[in-house]
Image (tube, rainbow, N blue to C red; front, side, top):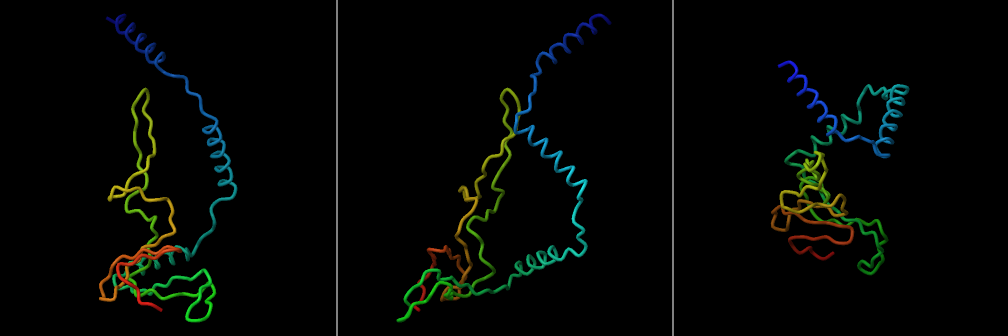
Length: 179
């Protein structure tokens, strides 16, 4: 019985070793490991900054809390960056044109409600993970960056509706009055 167990364990060990592939790190992995060692050395020599007051963190916290207020009313303007003729004279770039009363601050078009990426585990000859783009709840894939901004603006009837602004275009749900 002991011989049978010994033979079976030798066979299992042989199969396990034979089934293993020889692992060779890629040049990117080697560089990543070297970079990590360098950064660890730098961190041990330099350490972290001696932050004591956390002023910037407190300001960001205050900013986030103020932006979250349900009664935050703002006033939106668009900058005229190209000289244009306005009522008989030329307005140089930098003039602001009032658009209207808005609720809160603008949200960049590239803002996503869900995480822009998801981890997918792939099983073939070996198991590995891969990061893939993830669609927003509307089924569309938002861009990584965009120049457009969404604003929640009061229309002439007093209703708050979303409006879209880009440097070269502004889209509204109502007609703007002429200057």
